Image 1 (cartoon, rainbow, N blue to C red):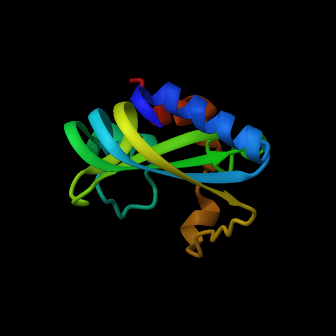
Image 2 (cartoon, rainbow, N blue to C red):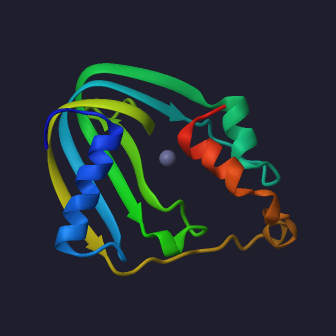
Length: 155
Ligand SMILES: [Zn+2]
């Protein structure tokens, strides 16, 4: 993958590659090692309370980072549309720097050039929490709007 790609261009190119190679109904993982002009990312703090939503955690504790001119890796996960709800459908990108010290959920990126590896997945394993608190927590409150805000970083 070459020449100054932003996040939408990376997602589009990855989608074309899996559509041409495999179709869009499986889960796919892409690893892109490369040089990045800039990256805007977010990381949430560790938390232990069970009765707090992801949106609340991120609103209160997330840190936004801007990284510039560094080597690193984009880890991109694709879930097909029919799995929306188990995970956000489409591509989801995380970044980690080459020295593994910087990283997070990617909102925007300007990639200089990178080498892409793709892997099709035909199996996922989901471990639900075993604590009683999980069974009594109202998960219906996790609305699609909230999830979209958390994913895309709009406030
Ligand atoms: Zn993320």
